[in-house]
Image 1 (cartoon, rainbow, N blue to C red):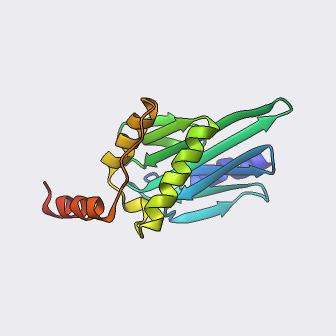
Image 2: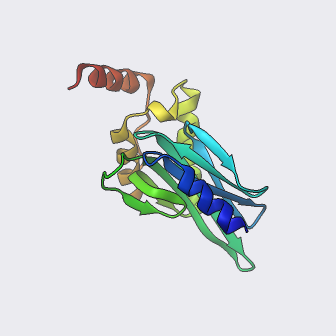
Image 3: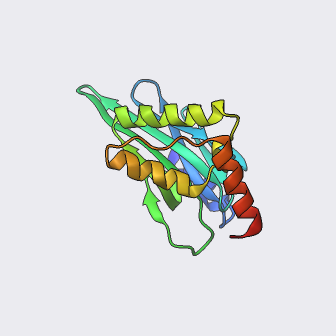
Length: 167
């Protein structure tokens, strides 16, 4: 019956919203949103819910899973939601998918990213508002084993000014 609930939830969503199905089975499978502004939430049951995001929204999805042998998945994705018909990359639990700004695998990299996000928030910047290029920069630096640049208020103001002037 729960499959029917999920299917009807997907069918009732407007076409332009991105859906993210979250699962929380304590110490087994845990999916959560680290940051983002959903427009709607639908609770499927006590362990599952669907969040809906408007086009061009930014959010961070953390997925972790384990079995009797240990951790089998540690991943953090920062995604931009896409408009209807816009090309996108597929991401498990995200329908239709999104523009992947950053992807890290392995707990050590996920932990570094969570610390990076914490540092951005400590600087009183909402991670949703961070430049897309910064997330891509962080992805590339981590992939190369390098330390990414900090995202400071000065960088953020420069980004906001550039976005306002359309440069």
